[in-house]
Image (cartoon, rainbow over all chains, first blue to last red; front, side, top):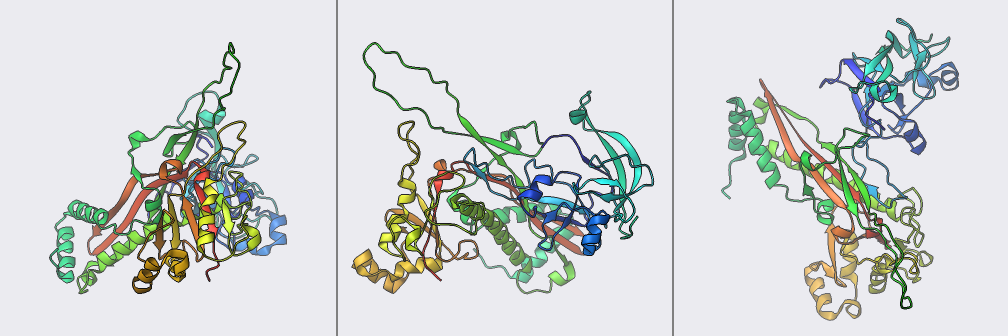
Length: 182
Length: 333
């Protein structure tokens, strides 16, 4: 949790015509992996799953190529409106309303995200790793996005030296739903 | 109240929208929405909502979402008996708190061409609005009762409750299963005066080390079951409930809502409270809080010939005292 911005839509959201899904994590393990800006897919029960779309995963489960990636937005940062799980040690329990919102890659959007690894350059095609983060696609990886701006700082509203609270390093991407592999 | 022709009502509503009085129509509908919240939902009867404003919220360092922090009582050491001349030992005072996060509830965005709206002889807009409010209430109830099951469960699976097994949250047994004699401490099965009275002992049984602090003990204030389970009361024989009540229920049905000194709430929502389930709740001040940050509000917009409306609200609820919930299950198919 935290106020540091890990995802920022530069184009396309908010929009009443946006395709978005509000759901919950598939299980406690997935819930632990979910975070704002990560890429997720919906499982057969309509629940969020963080899933690698690299060559090995696609090879093992070809049907993964057909799933629509979503970038997780509101509620994904575990900061309140997803319905916080109970606190067993403190003997209280919150009623779980709300959910975790995902913005579909079918939308005409562009977004800045700090959920990436490596050093994607402008024009690089990107895939999703097992942590739900974007990375430059290697041969056989499913392409889900294209980098439109390489690594840069995005302000979180608090100037200062500490990267975790003052700004995030992010790349800007647009979705790629061509279902091609690198 | 004078009956108004629904077709006239629809046209009047449309005229208000058409003349640009969208805000008035929204306010009128908003007022009407609040006044006609006829069935307040189960959660609202278990834990009456308190309306708060953004000024009542507590800012947090880790989120800019609305949060309310609520204080709660803690256990404290017991007194001791000492010889003369002995001074007391120190105990620093510190309380506990819990958090209430909020979420928005939304209906669908209902749309209609206004030409078509005026062609109905009943107030179809009002019907959709009323039904939307009921959907809103059900959305409040479902997670609440799922949470109650989770609290009473010995595992994290609220669908797999085991009778007479300690709650994973409180450590205390908070569920008796009267479908199986081995799943309650009384070895009772069935719905009877015995099993009902035995269920109420869940909360009254003290929990905690009595040599360290006062055990947690509560009283059941409100019981919730569905009407199908409620019919089991009507089946009770005179020797269990007394001849006068038995005869009265034989002719009038389930007309009493207080049994064994406990208030009962019978609901038709058997998708929320399943057959055979009985939820027991302590008084609200021993249970938790339910806040309304935005009361159910209708948004209406008319663009040319297209009418749209939806209802939204913002609420949060936390069971601050997990000991304030208990469950029983009876064999009701």
